[in-house]
Amino acid sequence: MFNEPVSGHTHDHIDWADRLVLLRAADTLDAPAHAAIAARLAAKLPATPTVIDLGCGAGGMSIHFAEALATQTGGTIILVDATPELLHEAERAVRAAADAAQANRADGSTHTSNGRVPDGSAEPSGGHRTAAEHTASTAADSTRAVEGIAQTVEGAAQAAADTAPTVEGAAPTVADTAPAIEGAAQTAADTASTAEGAAPTVADTAPTVEGAARAAGGITPTAEETAQTVEIRAVVADLADGSLPDLLPPADLVWASRVVHHLPDQQAAIGTLTAVARTGGVVALAEGGLSFSCLPWDLGLGRPGLEDRLKAAQAEWFVGMREGIDGAVPMPYGWPLALERAGLADVSSFSALADHPAPGPDGLADYVHHHLSRLATHGAEHLSDEDRATLASLLDPDSTHYLGNRRDLFLLGARTVHHGRRP
Image (cartoon, rainbow, N blue to C red; front, side):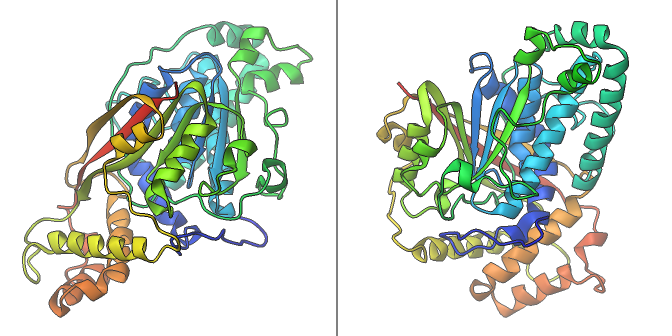
C-alpha cells in the first residue's frame, strides 16, 4: 500500500479503500464470469485495442481483459479509479496477470493465471483459489516464465505466433461492491497513481515478458512480439467530471461495472462514457440483474426468510444512499434506454448465471461473512430486533450458529451487461 494512504472523495460517502478485502474476495469468486465477459467483449475489438476500465476497483475485471488481449494481438489497458489504494492494487494485479498470460503464451500453455483457458471456459479441476493464492501464483508464474523464456528465445517466438481460440459467452458479475470512480479529476499525467506515487505512461509501462527476455539477451523483439504487448496505465480520475474525455485517449472499449449508479447524474455519466469511446468503440456497463443469494431459507435460528428481509433492507439503504448524494438526478428509465439516449447504437443486453453450489469454493464463507457484516451495518435500522440478533449470532465466531461452520452456504445470482457502439 501507499506510505500515506488517502482515500479519494466519493459522491456516495463510501470508504472504498476500507472494502479492499471484500473486493478481492468478490473478484476471486467472479473470476469465471469475468473471464467469459472479457472474452466476449474482446472478440468485438480491433487489433491492439485500447480498453479503459472506469471504476476498476481492485482490478478483477481487467485481469481478464489483460489475459484476453495477451492471447490475441495485445493492446493497452487503462485503469481509472478515484481511490488511490484501490488503483495501486489494481495496477499491481493486472500487470502480474498480463505478464503471466504472455509467459504462458510464450511457453505454449493455454491456461491463464486464474486456471482457465483463454476462451473463458472453466478448467475441470481444483476448485477456486483465494485472492492471496491467486496473487502468489501469478507472481510465481511470471518469474518462472521470464527465466524460461530467457533460455529459449526461439521457442518463445514460435509460441507467440500461436493463436488461442476465443468464444463468445455471456456471464455476470457477482459483487455488489464495485466502487464508483469519484474524486478530484486531474490530468492523467498529474494524477496517475503507482506505489511510488509516479504514474507510468503507455510508453513507460513494463515490457512484455518476451520483450524483457529478449532485451536481457541483447535481441530486438520482433514486430509480432511487440504487437502482443499488453501495456498498463493507472489514472486517478472522476467519472462525474465531464472533462474526463479530455484526460484519456479514445478507447475501443469503455467498461464500467456497477459504477454509474453511485454517481449524481447517471445519464450524464453514461454520456461521458460514450465520449471516451472512439467512433465505432464499444461502451459496456454491468448494472442491474438479480441480487445474489447465499443462505438457506430456514437457518434453524430466528424467523425463516432472513435473506429476503436483508435484501429488502439493502434496497431501503440504496434509496437512502441515492438521496444522500449531493446533486442527485433521478433516472426513471432502464439502462438500455439510457445507453440509447447517450447516442449509442446497436444497444443490447445479456444476462447470465453466477452459480457456486454448496458447499461452495474456497473463500465463499469469508466473502459471505463480509457481505452480511456490511448489510448488518447498512440495513440495521430497517431490520427487526429479532433479525438483528439472528444476524449477530451468524457473524459471531464464538456462536454455535456461526456461519463459518456451515456447509450449506452457496452463491447464486444473475447479472446484466448492457452495451452499445458509438456511431
